[in-house]
Amino acid sequence: MPNTLSRIGAIMRKESLHIVRDPQTLFIVIAMPAVMMFIFGYAFTTDVRDVAVAVQDLSRSTESGAIVRSIDASTMFRVAAVEGPIADPLEYFRTNRVKAIVCIPSDFAAAIRRPGGAAVQVLVDGSDSNLGNMIRNAAEAAILDPLLRVLNITRPDPVLVHQHVLYNPHQRSAFFFVPGLMVLILSMMSALLTSVALVREKEMGTMAQLVVSPLHSFEIIAGKLVPFMILAAVDGALVLFIGRVAFGVQVSGSMLLLASVSVLYIVVMLSFGLLISSITNRQLHAMFIAIIVTLLPIIMLTGYVFPVASMPAPLRWLSATIPATYFLQIVRAIILKGVGADVLWMPISVLTVQAIILIAASIKRFRMVA
View 1 (cartoon, helix red, strand yellow):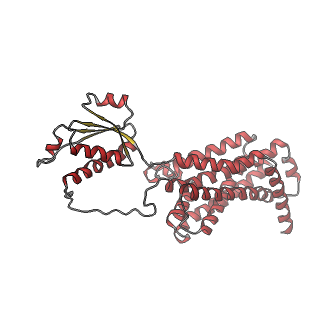
View 2: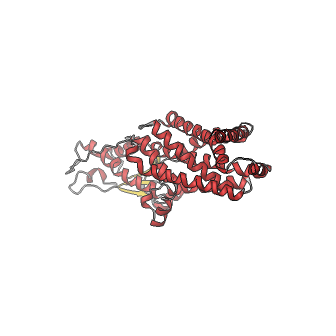
View 3: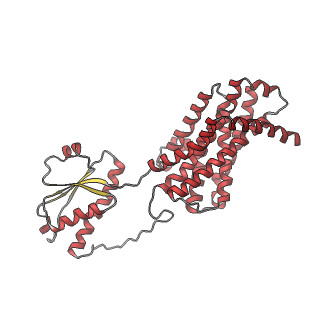
């Protein structure tokens, strides 16, 4: 046992010297996660603000003016133009950068006081289906609420629905995407760093020296994993720090549980990176494969952007084989809901099994390569 620890320590020192003397690796470890955090954190958002809207106001009355002011005062809409008659709405959408046209008829002021009421037409640009649905959901309230205030009446709803949003009361998309960014960055960094570990030995011609040394495969793998595990842990702490400072996302649950599961996931992805490293002979190829097999599946298939439940059955089955799917469930549950291990035992167990399988596969593959 002492000899084993001494050998693993020797490999760790060797890998640490490679990292310290390689400024490109240090840049990847420190700078890239911070840059990705800001770019993805601000770019991946479902918050809709200042949507340009045109108003065809044929009434020019106090009531129609209240609607225009209400729409323009909301955070979601911005009145880009108040027009007279619009002859061709399709042409208007093509030539003007607006996403909706609110059409107020000329008899609007009189019609709202008649028993049948008045009709206001809202034309929505449906080329962006998600944005179109948000406009449709918000348009009625933006039009009806100011009108009721002008008329000094209350809406005759038979049922009053009081909604309370938990965990993310302001519905900020950062609270949804930032925990996912932790999964994405840890996956990319872990797989990327170790994917070049064995390939570098092949390119430098030092693989043969490792093979003929008294080191066992497990000792070589462990010695290479531990330094990169520490670097990945630093990345995880950096992501949480930026998420707290820049986006206001706090960890609601146990930091110890989050750290423990993060280390487990880092082991999974480091082992996956070593597996990639064992089947390639060029560092560039290894890095390219690591990015492709981590970035695209995590974004598309794990629930990071699109709900897994909405996917076809074959894609749901594929999602169930991706470690990031389970780590994403755990991270969001701990950070946003404060959930404990008693609830998360199932995804934690799956990650543990995947870690054992990938470590065993890495050791076996290394023996075959050696």
